[in-house]
Image (cartoon, rainbow, N blue to C red; front, side, top):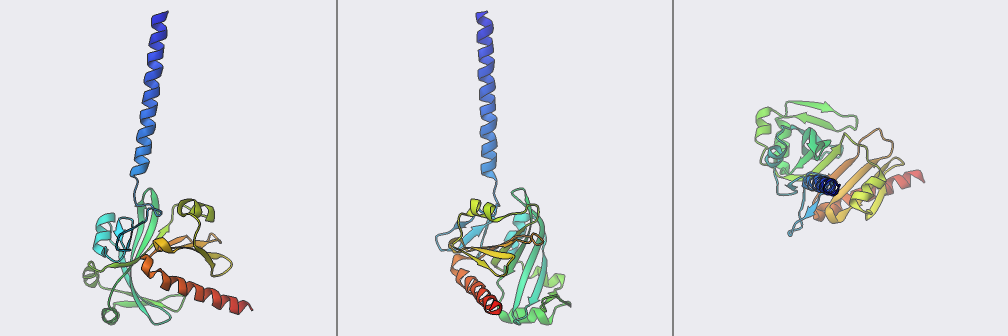
Length: 232
């Protein structure tokens, strides 16, 4: 009888340690997950790193190697006549979350003008801006351009205000550009989270270096004041 009790006790202890080890391994596996939107680090020089890319230093080529995907590169002329160059990566798996990523690239104004002149075709957008398609040869030459900002758009999950605050903490400010869109501002890490309360559009996480956040914030405050004046 004593032998049976000892044997049962040994089996129970073994099962306990097995379950403990499995739990430990599971937690380690979770800890190893990278490329999550709240994993933002600020470097000694003030630049921010997210998705293993350092804003203002990493290039389009660096990001391509990281995700092992080819982008769709487009040149945009906005309503204010400004030009910008963007690279779109669709359906990227970041930490188990499927998302689209848009990189805004640093390109001198003169070079942007030349890209516009040599564009293959133009597509007018509903906002009045237009998108210009570049040749494959031109796109290849842009691989060394630096990432000026990064926009992350999760498509496999729907976030709300509580989830955002749980991961990022209380924002420094919340700007409502209309009654259905809110901007959660985290200037210390250079992040603007655009929350669409109507649920018809996906959330957007816009990352810039903290030093560049003032320009974004001033633009948002300008939009807010303009809308408030209209309401009066």
